[in-house]
Structure formats: C-alpha cells, structure tokens
Image (cartoon, rainbow, N blue to C red):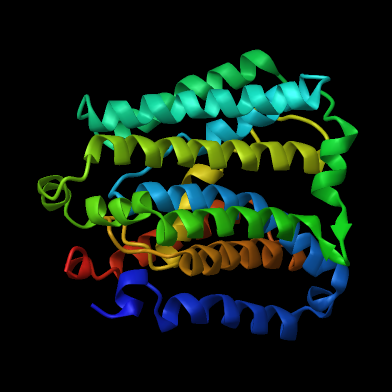
Length: 306
C-alpha cells in the first residue's frame, strides 16, 4: 500500500480547497484582504479541532454524532463560570465522561456508533439548554484574549489549530496507541489476535474525540465572549463531511492529519464564499449534505485493510 493510499490523500482532496481559493480570489476582491483571511482562520479553527477528533473515531471505523452537543455544552459551562480554570476543568472532565460512555457503549455493549452517539447527542443537547436556556453568559477576558489575539503577527486561532494537529499527529504516528488505532480500523479481529486490546483502543479514541470537541467549544465561547446551547449543532455533520472530503475512509484504517486540514479548509472556504456572495446561509447545510454524499460515493472501500 502506498503512502497516499494509507493517508487517503488524493489530487481531489488537495485540489478542492486550491480550486475554491482561486475562484474566490478571482471573483471577490475582498476575499484576499488580510482581515478576511484572518476571519477565515477564526471560522475554520473550531471545525478543524472537532474534525481532528472525528478522525480518531473514523480510523477505528466509528462515528461520533455527539461532538456538536459536546461543543455547545462546553461553551455553556465556560460561559456560566466566573473562574476560567474551574470552567475549563469541568468541561474537560465532562468531555472525558462522555467519551468514556460512548466508547464503552460501542465496544462493550456492542451498540452501533450511530445509535450510541445519537442518544448521547440528544441527552447533552438537552443538558446544554438546562444550563443556559438562551445565548448569553460571560466568558472570562483571559479566554477571550487567547482566542481573538495574535502572536508575532499570526492569529491565535492558527495556534490553537497547530497545537491540536501536532498533538494528534504525535499520537497517531509516534505512539503505540496510534499504531493500534490504525490496526483496529483496518482489521479488528487481526489486531486482537496480535495482542491489541481493541476495547481500550476504541474507548480511548472516543474519549479523545470528546476532549477535542470540548476544546473547540471552549475556543468558540471565548471567540464570541458568550455561550450558546445551539452553537455546535452543525459540527456533527460538518466534521464527518470534512473527514470524508479529506479522504478519510469511513470504514476505518485510512486517514491523515493533512486530509483533515484540506477537508476543513474546503468547508471553511465554502462558508466564507457564501457570506461574501450574499447567498442565504441556509444553503450551507444543503451544500454540506451534497458534499458528504459525493465524498462517500467516491471512496475506494477496497483499499481499507489491504
């Protein structure tokens, strides 16, 4: 198997964001403005962080639809705690519990990932509305500065993305757990016969996915300086679409950080283009659904596990 096959990267996954960038730059003069490019990085950051977690779950042939509700709930928790450290720690602890429940439900109780995470998503969404029925709250100024400032001339959202991507990259390519994640996704029975503790790997993947969704929720709340029980609603579908656009096989075993970046960048550019052209934002969901269907249809499932 070639490196491109293992990572899922192809000329289509790389070419789509490049094509979108060229079209937008040629069609909208304001697109290439520094302010707009900084705005794009801020918009894409949360999606990219969530998608990195979705990648970990997809590599073991799973899916996590609860990430959107985790994003919303984390933002609500941070916005309703005056102490930023307390709010962040509570959100991370809750994320770990959610991931543990999802992982045990899938690996131990043999509940289908769609059913398990859909149930968790519904529960967490209701909990978010109980904590903060309407958008509001107050995010500590320190968190706001960490999400909206810049460092050495670079927008801080890029730093959030770089740190999360680097950590996930180290996990996947420089640790035994990363090797086991690819092995379980490619062939769980073979991995188990070779001594891989598949239950632990699956649970770890779901826990890390939820923790990354918490980080995205904290970032979003800090960026807008408030919480919103519905702010993460779109991330469940968009994160799955982004990994599919990036060549990540939804049947497990194939995917890469670079693919996640290209997929999230494509969706971010589409969203920015919709705003710049003055198109109804409701079209965004339609486009996302069409892209997900197209990306799944062109996936080469025979490559998985080979």
